[in-house]
Amino acid sequence: MEQARYSDLKYLTVKLPEDIEKLKWYGDFERAQKVIDMRLQKDIPKALRRRLELEKWILKRLPLEYVYTEEEALKGLSDTLEGVTREEFEQLRDEGAVEWLFVKGQVRYKDDFVENLLKTRHNLWKRLKDPSKVEGRIRGSELLDRTVAAMKDKGGQAYRMHIRSSLQVEKEVFRPGAWIRVHLPVPVEQGQVKNFRLLGTSDKGVLSDGDCPQRTVCMEAKLEQGREFWVEYVFENHTKYTHLEEAGVLTGQKAAGLSPYLEEQLPHIRFTPYLRELTWEVTEGEKNPLKAARKIYDYITTHVMYSFVRQYAAIDNLPEYMATGLKGDCGIYALLFITMCRIAGVPARWQSGLYATPLEIGCHDWAQFYIEPYGWLYADCSFGGAAWREGKKERWDFYFGNLDPFRVPTCREFQHEFMPPRFWLREDPYDNQSGEAEYEDRGLISGAEYSTKKEIISIEEIPL
Image 1: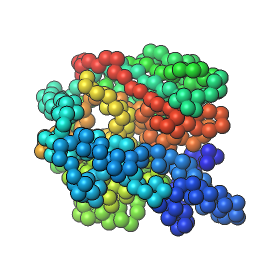
Image 2: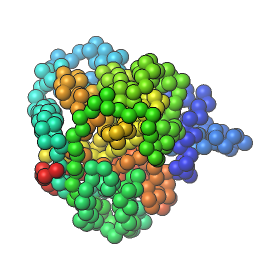
Image 3: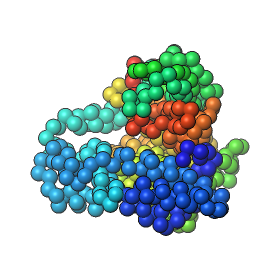
Image 4: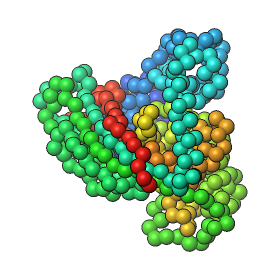
């Protein structure tokens, strides 16, 4: 379905015909594709046509992450933990702790389900056959506790970061001499980002403007065997600590330019009847915007369990997915917070990129919300939820209003096209933390057809 346009994403709000939906969830993806092709030959409404074209794109990608049979999954968990039983495994699945999908009528488990269990269920750590698997998590938690204390004491922190990001096409889809276009993300020069410098690129490219909503370096080249595309940059992250006082909030005042952050943005930031009712139940009609936002943060962080999910393009409504299933990853935490804040009349928006410390680097998403007289504040419901599960109340409170300085923000808006734009539909139409690639005749599939890597060259604390 590579003809789909970026503007077509709103048609994901159109419900799939029931016969196609049944084939999809049974896991007969080939037959679902065939039925869609037959339907597209007919005279059907434009909205339905666009929805079916998008579904063809989704069906190609949906099963790729679900690789383990039940026996393989059970063995993988048994290889990691002592004393695993089939009954325990099935209980974890029924609790929603193990992500699965039907593929051709057979249950298949997600490729990272063991890692997900270790990330979210610390009670399993004492049964690890190799305790070193969680040593990094323990050190990371201790680092955050020290950082929270330091930021409160100093009024903030700043770090200079030197990062290298790269992308390489897999040999199975390698085309010698083919034209290829690659987009690799770099920091947006907004908010906490200061003194950005692009140090180098593998190929001559176009650097987006500093305030581009999803900033990239776009490179075009002829593909060669073993070719690696890369960008290298340095910047400073200056993050201040804000002490919040509910009594000091100014109600009834709105700064200019906030209206877009109170609106729906289809298909995901959608004010559905369920989300409206949930927001009203959680906020209890609170008129103080800081109190309302805090009630939303408290509810999400104490009721939702972190969980790796399939790629976002394969989920119809991300905030409602979390609000009904009570699980999801960092980006869905952020989107549910943003959506509920907007419903409650609190301006909220997206920010995402990388989480980079002296210990690790990886993708991460979080949110911002606007309160007078403070301006734009941060909310990281994912990190807040982790702190709650660990019993770290000070850290839990910190991530409502504040953010650690270990962020590389490459996106300041959710669901925004690159500049210059891709020719084919984005691999992740909503976010960009790792990079994307396309040939002249189609886009490449992340993970299956190209791999990406992020590296910390150096990171050092500097004066705020």
